[in-house]
Length: 369
Image 1 (cartoon, rainbow, N blue to C red):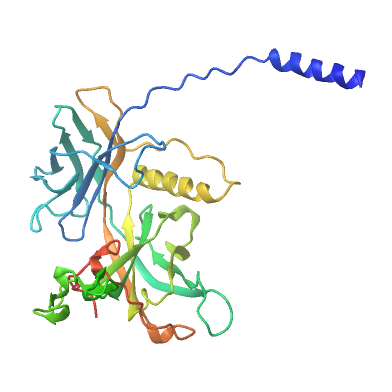
Image 2: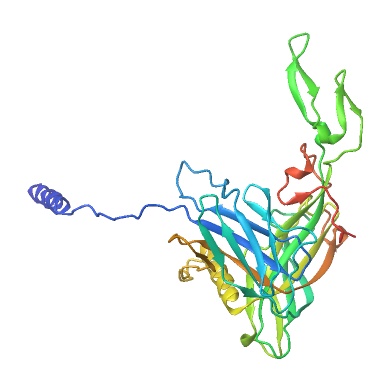
């Protein structure tokens, strides 16, 4: 017992000799974040301006701090320029028939905030781009003839660079699917004449239905029942010609599309864009890709600090993000519902406008077949 008491006293003395660590954490700064690009595809082109925000329990992580009322001018190296319009909070856009990205030309942004602070992006040149030669999809999921959560298709692509060029490419996926919802079926429960619950139809206005004497009556066609939604690759895929032979890139994994009753209500269109990059832009997206991969792989080393190409002109605040330029070539395929390895149940009855789905529009895309 005496020995135990001595050990406890010794431990208390040892712990009492340890000073608490004092770590000086620099004060958080709301830095400007720029996200935009121009391509050889037709405009309009979009630039997003936000403010970085601290992480904490009292911060709404789904809410970005938009940088509003800024003056953004897009310029090329032969004297063309255009002032962008703020179409939503922090989102600025060129005109549909405005400035056009062209191979060989360089482009940059000039930004003036409402507080007078000025920023500029380093000019980025649109280099020649190769082509996507094929899009491949491989089923990933359980065996058998029944749907399982997590089933889907792994998407990969083959591409060619430009002969005689040092090719740096980003391969980008856009997966588009058609969706149907049922906004006319919304209802609320009210107290009936006998005190019991009563269902009262309360259709969304865009559904084309109204409640007349507690009955649904159609007054116009639905404006929010059919939408086309987009899925994007979560990790930027960039490739460098020096690791290939004969300007050919083969079996580059791009992304994953899930199989369920919504994504394959009808069919899915998979588009792969080959985007030419300058060496600096390639390095930026390579670091972003490494950082995103590192979040899910504990064996990857931490990536270097990601430097963009935005610099301050009349102040000392460091800005984040990038404005880049790219040549684009695209290829697309369709995966029909009938190609699935099993029968997927009919679409679920989602009682909401289809525009509630992320990255969706009720305007039929011109490319949809």
